[in-house]
Image 1 (cartoon, helix red, strand yellow):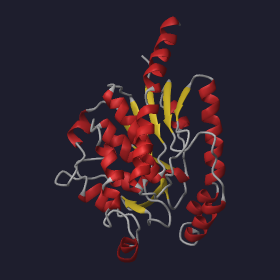
Image 2 (image 1 turned 45 degrees about the vertical axis):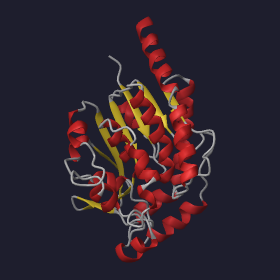
Image 3 (image 1 turned 120 degrees about the vertical axis):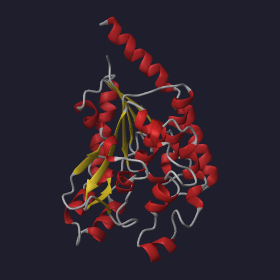
Amino acid sequence: MMKSAIIDVGGGMRGIYAAGVMDRCMEEKIHFDVGIGVSAGSANIVSYTAGQKGRNYLFYSEYSRRKAYMSLGNLLHKKSYIDMDYIYGSLSNSDGENPIDYPALDANPAEVITVATNAITGEAKYFEKSDISQDNYDVIKASCSIPLVCPPYIVKGIPYYDGALSDPIPVEKAFSIGCDRVVVFLTRPKYITIKKGKVMLIARGIRKKYPKAAARMEQRAENYNAWLDKAVSMERQGKVLIIAPDDTCGMDTLTRDTSAMKKFYEKGFQDGGAITRYLHVSCDQVMEL
């Protein structure tokens, strides 16, 4: 039996592209054995595993426009531009406006891995589905906590930042747990690399309190670009399929332009059509062996 995985690398509001890809997967009844989410990708993965088609789209296109979701007021009063407790608590809990279907998530046999970064050690933490429970989505909040935009989120006494600091494209993690087919969702074109400028300013802002996390941030561009090269190389070898947009439709990490979001989501939905063929070809190759 082959073991398949999807990896959603996140990217803030650009994650609406991957939401489109996953909605296409749900429409075509495509299932994976493992879902690995980084940053916003962790929230996408949970809704996908719970089978909630269209749920992620609303969080990007509608809820993100609310001041309670992200605003300077949040930064002033809550010390966090994005209110993780509102998104993955008030909105997502069983009594919330748009709950995660936790019973469906729990019943799905697929593994769910959420990547976060230990703010003290700078090392990657791979939370498992067992770390999620009804109305306790703290590991998602941790994975999504962008330095300076948000403080680190505390899980069991340990502060965590965005998983992208420590493992931005976790293909190695997927193969280390026995996956044979890996589909990676990027939210930038795969020929675009990250430049150092902005991340160095962010690193400076957290260095005093979290020097090892700051060091990870300083290495973020180099780390992402290196893993992007490896993923592209693996794709040439047939080990990986990369689903990536040919352009970002004007979307960036904190963009809330509804027209751009709709275009980017639709692009993801369209691009997701390549997954069915990849999975069928992979199965045919194994059967020939």
